[in-house]
Length: 327
Image (cartoon, rainbow, N blue to C red; front, side):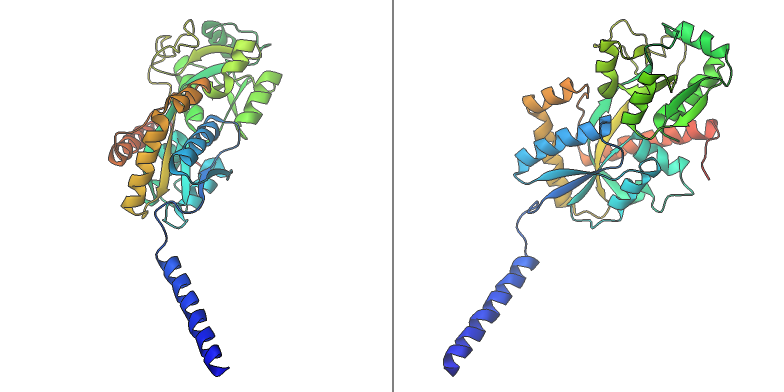
């Protein structure tokens, strides 16, 4: 009887030992579901890009990639959450031009992190063009009429944009160059902005093409210009703000995947290779194209880092020129 007890104890100890070894030496990354945090609301371009990429990565790596929307504070809540998460590759951020190139300057006094130091980009994912749009009943029918109509009503018209976001800064610069005076109504998200534009509650705004193209084509919205450098294939007759005489205004809403800064380089390399492989697949490219999200990838994580740093410096200059800050 005692001998059996001893054998049982030895076997039990061996099981616990093997279990601890298995925990200490996990399988190749990823060996459990990976969370991609979207710091903005569902239905916007960043959210759509994240969901398309998550589905593709799930297929490429054979492990579940899923989305969690953590909204609030112009994207800072979700961004901070990821930056303070374990640097193990299981919590990632789908960041964009606002969260990762603008917020560090605009919200410098509020942020508990330094995005450029606490997060590292892995690869660009998409670069989404934007449109200047209004509801169907807004009287102006082209950009020239819109500017004249607005200048005749200083302070009486409004636009919608996230505080400190790229569309907010672009609209402020557009106001200044065109000699207009409008009131910004802070946006609660892409979905609410679209609803408010269509209903006429908001007069006009800059929104990304991924979320408004179908509204424009169906007549539920009017489009006046694109903020991109070139005209869009979907709207060849729609002028750019640059060719309309307003240089320096306009940004594409780029999206990129970020990880906590101390994430091991082998994990970064696995994710980078998987992103490139996923987005190069014809069916994935087609899904991005159908969603009006031109897929864009980086040549390396270093190239992604250089791009984000360069864009951050450009926005820092624009923010200071417009004397924008939030206490």
